[in-house]
Every structure is written in C-alpha cells, then in structure tokens.
Image 1: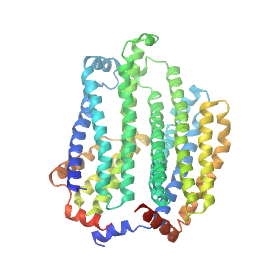
Image 2: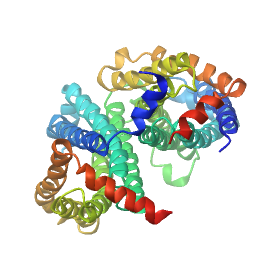
Image 3: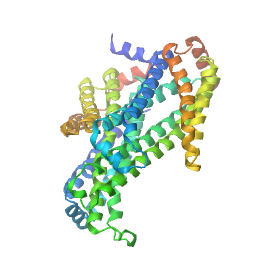
Image 4: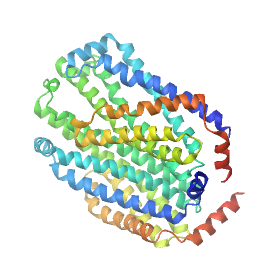
Length: 250
Length: 231
C-alpha cells in the first residue's frame, strides 16, 4: 500500500469502525473502572484512619493496581469521547463538540483524584523527614486525602453526566442509532448529576442514592456500548444524515 | 492555511518549552530541593526565593507553549486523520491540565513558610516537614501527566509515520519517547523501584531533533498539499 493510499484509507474510515472503537473503549473504561474499585475499594475502612492506613501499607500492590486501572479507564474514556464526537457530528455539530469538551473536563478533573491517590502513598511511606508529625496525624491526613478523592469523583461525575445527557439527546435525535438507547443514556446521565448534587447539598442523604444510581447508569452506558460494539451504526442512514447536515451548512 | 508558518511556529514553541521547562522543572528543583532534608530545603527556599518563583514562571511559560502546540500539531496532522489528531490534542490538553494541578504543590510551600499567625499551632519542625511533603507531592504528581502526554505522542508519531510530509525516523524517535513516558508512569505506580529517569530521557533525542527539524525544514509542503487536497 502506498503512502497516499494509506492516508486515503484513513479518510474513508467508515463510521461503523469509529462506532466500534468508541464502544470498545467505553467497555474498557467501564471494566477498568470497576476493576480499580474492586482492587482498592475494600482497603478503605470508613472513618478508621489507622485501619485504612494499615491496609494501604500492607496491601500496597492492590492500592497501586487500582490506581493503574483508573489511569487506563481515563485514557480509554478520552478515546471514546473523541470517537463519539465524530459519530454523532452529523446530528449536531456544536452539541457533539460540547459533549466532547465535557468529557475532556471530566477526565481532567478525575486526574486530580489520581494526584490525591499518590498523596496517600507519600504520607504513609514512613520517611524520616515526616518524623515531626505523629503517625496518627499522618494517618488522619491520609484519610482526609482519601475522602477528598470521593469528592473529586462526585465533581467529575457532574461533567460526565452532562456529557451523557448530551450524547443521549444526540443518539435519540439520530436516524442511525435506536432512540431507546439515547433515552436510557440520558436517564443514566441525569442520575449521575442528581446523585452528585445530592451528595454536595444533603450529605446525609446523597450516599443513599448511590446503590440506585449505578445500576441505572450501567444500563444506559452498557446498552449503548454493546450496541456500538456489536452493531455499530446504520451506515446508509449515517451517510444520509451526514450529507444532509453538510448541505444545510453550505 | 500557510502550513510552513504553522511548522515554524511549532518549532519556536518547542524551543521555548524545552528551555523554560528544563529550567523550571529540572534545574531549579534540582538546585533547591534537598531530598529527605526538610530543614535544608526550607533554608534554600528562603535564601533563593526569587529563583524558586522563576522556576514557577518557567513552568507557566512551558504550559502556554504546550497548549498552543496541542492545537498547531492538531492542524498539521489533521489531513492524515482528523479523529486521531483530535485524540492526540485531547491527550495533550489533559496532560497539561494535570501538570498544572501538580504545580499547585510547588507553590504551596511559599504559603506554609510565610510565618502567618494561624500556622503557629504547628512547630517549626512540623512546618518544615509539611514543606517537604508538599514538594514530594509535586514531584510525584508532576509525573502523572506523563502517561497522557506520552499517549498523545504515540498517536502523533503514528500519524507522522503515515503522513508522508514528516520524515519517518522522526516518527520513530517520537514514538520511542512517548512509549518511555507511558512505561515510566505505569512503573512509577506499580513498581516504583524500576521507574528509572532514563525512560523520560528517551523523549530528549526526538524532542530536540523535532525542534531543529521544524525550524530548519518544516514540513514537505508539496506532499502536505497533496494529502490535504484530497480531502
């Protein structure tokens, strides 16, 4: 294959392939995110700084593994964000771009959580220069740090939620993906936003929503993910909508 | 779009970010931070306050260049694949956003050292510890961006390889540099003992030659036109 054929091949890349990449990376994001939670989540003992610190020191490799999964989850979500932008661009250029920017902001905010994850490891490393602080002070600081990570997660979820609502709207308005998938994703995204605001505004009540939010969100994201991965998009209708959008622009 | 002008601007931004970044991220911290000695580090920060602040300014200039580079490289590589070049730009923006957050911990020692009344509940030793702790956070956090920055370069290297208007050897060098960054990051998290700085240095040959190449040769305009004209 010559160079110009290579580049031509890139450009003719079909929306089905883009949709499949978006679906595959979305699935990877969900799987890695859940794996990260399973690896590191049980180490945290609610409101017991000493026990939590002991867990993180004793099972440092699990804590680190959970961290690595989070990095993979974030990276694959960025890929999904970009490819969904191109898949849905024929439906609405600006809204599709807005959704992508919300996704980028969400991953960047999530990155703050990764910095905080490292902070716990530094605090509990037992270095000499920290000897001016007592062990229980360092453990308490590490606990604050872990709690802040949850807050960061809640903040990022607002942005992901708005992105999901936007993508859901575009999917529902598209002719090349089933409308029900868009509605389910929109409901999932809305539940993220509600749960996050509830956790900021009514901290005693917010956490009780979590057991309901995740199944709803998983149905929304999961169904679209699998559809994209298995079916892609209806290529003929995608091209019709794309050329109609192009005509109305010019 | 005058592609050669884009290439030259990219070259200038690379050069500025290499110098400013090298000063702010390597030279200044290496002069002032004494690993494991909180008191000595605090004394250095007091005595060389302006140098320390200059380091921060260097970082800011580097970030400005990085954001502009993310857009210019997107424009230069878009004819090859608009999807992947946007993806590389997103990885680039993400990397810079993360690094900016890490820089917060570079700045916070200046607040801890200010002898403010509200801090008197901590002993001087404790305050010194907090200063070095903050700098440790900075040191580690400042490395988290490398995974995303590296992934951005791997994607760009792939596009450069297929472009026809960038030399293939440059694509290979940048791919090596990007891979070094990604591997270094995951090793830092999973097996810190193996996270050698040599992996970061792998970016240096590519970055340097890329800078020179963009300033001296730019891109192959005829081939760029051929590829982008087909669109």
